[in-house]
Amino acid sequence: MDGASDDKVEIATSLAQDDVDEYPEGGLKAWVVLCGAVSGFFATFGYVNSWGVFQAYYQQKLLHHSSPSEISWIGSMQHAMIFLPALIVGRLFDMGYYRVPFAAGSLLVVLTTFLVPQCKVYWHFMLCQGFGVGIGSGLMFSTMLTVVTQWFKKRRGFALGVTCFGGALGSTVQPIILRQLIAKVGFAWAMRSLGFILAFVLVITNVCIARRLGPVKAPGGLLGLHAFRSSSALSVFGVCTFVTFLGLFTMLTYISSSAIAFGISPNFAFYLVAIVNFSSGIGRVSSGLLGDRFGAMNIMTIMTASAGAATIAWPFCRTIPNITGISVLYGFTSGAWLALIGSTVGQMGGIEDLGRRLGAINTIAGVGTLCGPPISGLFADSRLGYIAVGYFAGGALLVGASLIFVSRCLLAGSGIGRKY
Image (cartoon, rainbow, N blue to C red; front, side):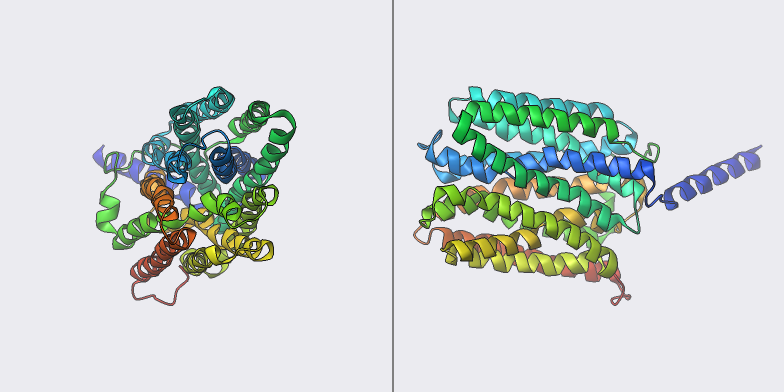
């Protein structure tokens, strides 16, 4: 009897492994899921990455008594709350619980967007936009990335790049919508209109999103620290993620307000956020394709270093042509991180606990995101102003690029010439 039981377990394990290894790489269901993830990114990252518009508007109008650093904490909290819940969300996903958190996140994003017009003082905006929109997006973010990785492997970089393009599309369209509606119907109705758009898009997302594999009880508890202990490459990549995210969103946060400070018309400065985000969308799809061809970590290293150089150069670009050009370069190169992080973490272990592993890395990213722009805001008030901001954020990105390369070498081991 014991031998028969062992045979059954072995057969079941073999079948489960076959199910894991045989990725659809397409088909109607896979593309429907991908469309759901794209629309979800449109509503979440598209919204949060539009913060530069709010930063500039609040500095000029609603929160003009607050410093740029204080206001940037709202945007930083949004970005951080996307990533910080990822460890718990990823673990719940691995265990099979994702529908309820996903729907709850969708509802929270829509409700808090409708509440923003009622905000009067700083802590109201922090509660609604910083925590409400951020946490709501965070309850969806890791699930969307992990679901896509279950349907694609060889074309994973491309699929994740397309997913992240949804966020870039949202953060290109939404600033333009907000800018136009604020001028025509006022801030309150602009936010209500945005709320209706987000509600429609997120209904589509909830209908389309679906996992391919069943739940798995992976060893290691909630934190899964054994993955870091057993993989020096993953440990170094965790440090790299924190350092990189100290500088990754800084330029996006301050691009509009810095342009106004440089003497560029506010009417044009508001559109720089859309320019950065559209370029980022092109960069995400391109990085995904290049990552599939040449290795995700190889492309991520080059793109992160280029984004760091662009960030250092940004404060010296004080004319419309120059600041537009540097915005395009920064957007294109910085887009690689979101497109390739799933592929990178995916090759540092098995798929059975990918949700938890990716969640842990995203939680680390959230801590860096929370700290980065406010620290940069303190530098903005210094004697060097945005030049100091560029040095700090750009330097963080260059250090991050170096650490990606170190992690890649540790992962490759003796096969240093292989595609990673």
